[in-house]
Image 1 (cartoon, rainbow, N blue to C red):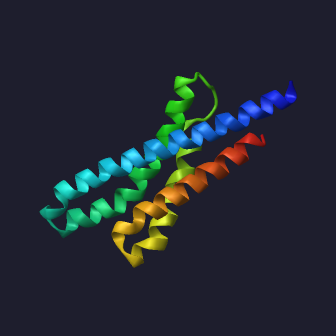
Image 2 (cartoon, one colour):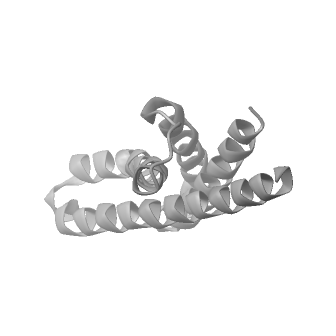
Length: 127
């Protein structure tokens, strides 16, 4: 019985991470659409949009976990417990790769966002 519970918990964590990556990617895509539509309005707006990119993407990662929990009626994660992990991961990813080319931050944000969510799952699974 205990092994069955562990097995279910591992699959639940994997599905939660996949849902998080999907919604995080969707939020990045929506940010990119806004950026492409508004980038020609001036450099200030363009700069603001670049700054909020990791925050928007991190919010998408967190929302993916919360939606997954809500759909499957899983109690647990509070919004503030979840959002800090992917936002920090996305910010770190954006800061690392931004200097090589701003349009490449999508790869690093998705990578570091996924890593941060995976670490979050491991940390909270141990409790």
